[in-house]
Length: 108
Length: 308
Figure 1 (spheres, helix red, strand yellow):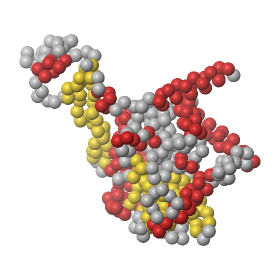
Figure 2 (figure 1 turned 180 degrees about the horizontal axis):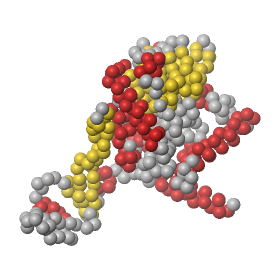
Figure 3 (figure 1 turned 180 degrees about the vertical axis):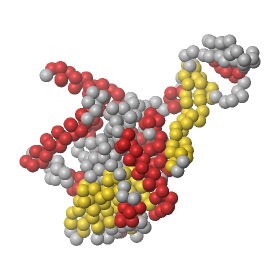
Figure 4 (figure 1 turned 120 degrees about the vertical axis):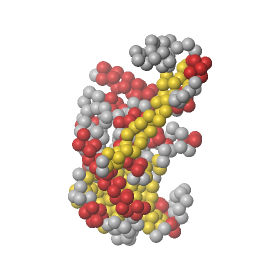
C-alpha cells in the first residue's frame, strides 16, 4: 500500500513539474546561439569568420578534384525549418512535410 | 443548401445514422450544411495515441472522410461549414507541443486546413490559446463558434469541457483531472487500453452515485448524470436568449435552440421542450479508440453519423 502511495505521489509530482514548463519558442531556443542560414552560393569566409577553424577537414573524394571540399564542425545545432506542403498523388490530395530552410548554429 | 438526406446519399453509403440519433427541429438551426468533427486527440503515433490506436484502418477511415469533405467543399463552396470541436491535439500527453504531431499526421492536418475547417479549442489543446496569450496568437482556435439563421443566433458549438466538473481547467477539479489524465497516459505505455478500462470503471462508479444522488451539487441539481451537460447548456442558451451575457449579442439577435459539443467521446442527440421552446444537445462522439462519428446539421435536420 505504501509503495502504491509513493508511486502516485511521485507520478503526480513528475507530471506536475513537466506541466509547469512552457515550451520554448524558436526565438528563445536561438537566443544563446550564433546562427547562419544555409544558402547555396554563400561565401565560405562568412562561415569561417563566424565559426572559426573547422574540426574536421576530410580529403576530397576521388574524382571530385581538389576544389570541391567538405568541412565539418562538431558541437553544432541545426534547425530544420519545415512546412506541410500539398502534393497530388494520382486522384487524391495529400500533404508531405518538407524542409524549407536550415539554420546552422553554434553556442555563443 | 444540401439537405441531410442528400449528404447521406452523396457519401455513397459511408455516412450512416448512428444509433437512430436523428431529429427534426421546429425551425431552421443552420442556413448551410454544417459538419462537426469531434475529438481526435492526435499524438505522435506512440502506444498512447488513441486516434491511431495501433490500427491503420482508423486513420484510413478518417482520411477517407477528409477526401470526401474536400470534394464536398469543391461542390458546395461557401454553403458548407466544417467545425472541429476541439481536442484535435492531445497536448496533455504530447512529447512537447504540436511540432512532432504535425510530423506524424501531415495529411490529416493539411487536409483539415484545405477544407477550411473552423477550429474550436478543447481542454486537451487549450495550450494553443495560452502559449501566446499576450500576443493574441491563438492559431485560429476559437473558444466557441456559432451559426445564425436570418441574422439570429441559433446554435453554438464548443468543446464541452466548460460544463464538466472534472475537466474545466478554470476549476481545481479540472486541474486534478488533468494530472490524473497524464498519469493514465504514462500507464498506457505499459497497458495501451488502460484509459478505456479506467474510463468504464469511472462510468460504473458514477452511475451508482447518480442512482442514489449522493454527490448532487447544489448549483447543478442534475449534476453527475448523463444530462449534466444538457442542463448546463439549456441554462446557457436561456441566458443568451434573455440577453444576460457579456458577449455583444442583444436579445433581439439571439434565438438559441441548439448546442453542439464533443468532449465526452459518447455520441448523443437529445431534445428537451421547455417553456414553448425545444432545446437540442448534440454530442458528436469522437475519433479515438475506433470512434468514427460526425455531427451533421442541415436546416431543421440534425443527426449523428458514423463514417465508413
